[in-house]
Amino acid sequence: MKLVKLAIGNVSSVVGATETNTNTVLAITRAAAAEDVWLIAFPEQVIGGYPAEDLVQWKAFVDAQRDALQRLAHETRDLRTILVVGAIVRVSGQLFNVAAVLHGGAILGFVPKEKLPTYNVFYEARTLARGASLMALETGGVPVGDYLFSFGDRTIGVEVCEDGWSPDGPMRRRCFSGAEIVVNLSASPYRVGVVSTRREMLATRSADNQALLMYVNAVGGQDGLVFDGGGYVFQNGRMLLDAPRFREGYWPCTVDVDRTSRLRTENTTWRSDCEAFRRGATPVPVVGSTRATADTSNLQYPAPERDRLFLPTAGMPARSAREEVLDDLYEALALGLKDYYEKSGAFQRFGIALSGGRDSLLSLLVAWRAVQLKAGTPDHERIKAVVAETISAFYMPSRFSAEETRDVASTICRELGVPLTVSPIDEAFDREVAAVRAMLGAEPDATTLQNIQARLRAQRMWNWANSSGALFIQTSDMSEKAVGYTTIGGDMEGALSVIANVPKTVVIAMLERLHARFGLEGIASCLRTTPGPELAPRQAAETDLMSFGILDACLHLYAGEKLSPDDVGVALASIFPDVPADELHEHARRFATLFTQSIYKWVQSPLALHVGSLDLDRERALQLPVVQRTEWWR
Image (cartoon, rainbow, N blue to C red; front, side):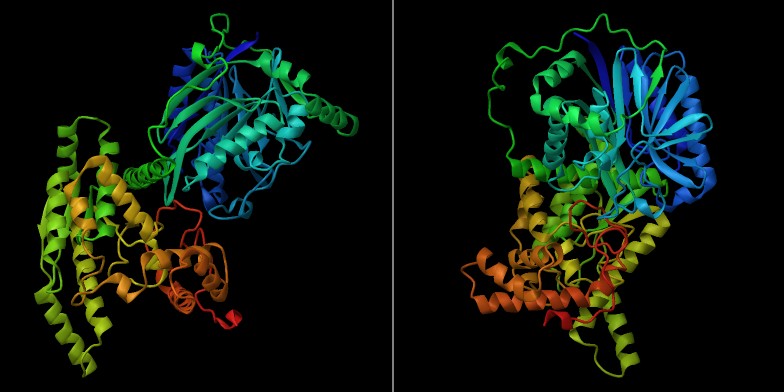
């Protein structure tokens, strides 16, 4: 046996907080070293925070990271634990996103990321240079390039995030060159469904390369991104550790490195591939360290439990796959909101315009969970007191507001302990209509009358937020945003958009799940109402638009799958066989028209949390021209 203890270190870093981030890494490392951890890994760019975007163009920001690494090496000089830490380093005129290996008071080397993504929310190739096979550079006496690291009879390889997502990444040549343990430092944002994809992909990489693969992910919110943290240790494809997600801390795991070596000798396919590599390629060079590593003499063999020697643990999962996804989405939204609130340092409380409808109700429940995370205690009474101090809700009815939605607002606030202020807008509405009438010399149209109400509410929220130092939460959902069923200067207003990338059908599913979990009567009452903005008599959103199911199918097919309107109509027929085909084609055309004409609206939306593979955000996700024609449809 050749036992070592590995640890995953999850840190919720803040961009630019190089000193604070380093302090957190140092504190976790010291705690892990006290448990004889042989190697601990921290996330991608943990020192400077991720994503730093164009901040890396400031020389002082990059220099501060190098200083922090030097300090980290110096302050861990008496520890035997090996550190693998993410940072940005400058070499001549190039910037590299690196995994830094530290041990015994020295920085042993920097290994640059080779695969720089420029899809979805990533723009790394805009400012960063790529690593490459057998790259051999140097900065300040520290090697920078394609290296392995040996510690006695154990050899490790390190890589950064996207390098592990590609089957032709550097892991293969590093394992063929002798690495038994591969450490992947990541900052992989949460997206609905990404957990299973990530886990299966990493298990495959570990099996393909017959390696001990250690994966660590960033945790916490940064602007609109949410990182779910966690991490894995796989040994030759078998999971040994699944670290908790959405939490800061460290999680150790004892492994037998000899098992990886033995399985390599048994796997004839891996051996023949390795032989071919060695005949035609130059092995990756090794940086050696002679400093003492952690004591392994007291480690116990990581044997499975008696009933798991040959079979998995019996029992049914506590949650269905759907429930798990909905619960994760709720945690991700709450964590993103909490960290935006705390890390920005600009706010004293949350504020929300509560209509009694589904969107504002879900946004309130997300804020409620964010306050629980912020409070950091399971004590119900303490949480209720913090909620009362931290969240303010406002119900601003007009003559079109229904008694049912007023009851929803008052009921849910009473159940959660949220103070609710009722501030009617009818008098202000009448004054504004009169002013518009005088300016026009005519009666304002029906849409303007609706928009006036939305803008009055937003103006009041902004005035209150400015005076109270509050984070004004914007509450519109993705489906209505996509087709412009929103008001510029009205319900599109806010400091942070919490559910702007959550489709309406998912909003409803989340509310149903939260009702099942918490049994809140306010949720049940809301789900019994007819969805609508209540800006006109008996207004119903599905009457104004189309059924939410068809609307979200159009959103998925047109914006997500990039089908033409005619192809969307054809695809809809397979999803909704009971709806006439000509009606579905009309819905598809109408959706595409509304979507295209509404881009100018949603590019003006506040910063939104990114939680799906399709997000309506021109800066970071779906980059569409505001001005465009649709002749290509024909």
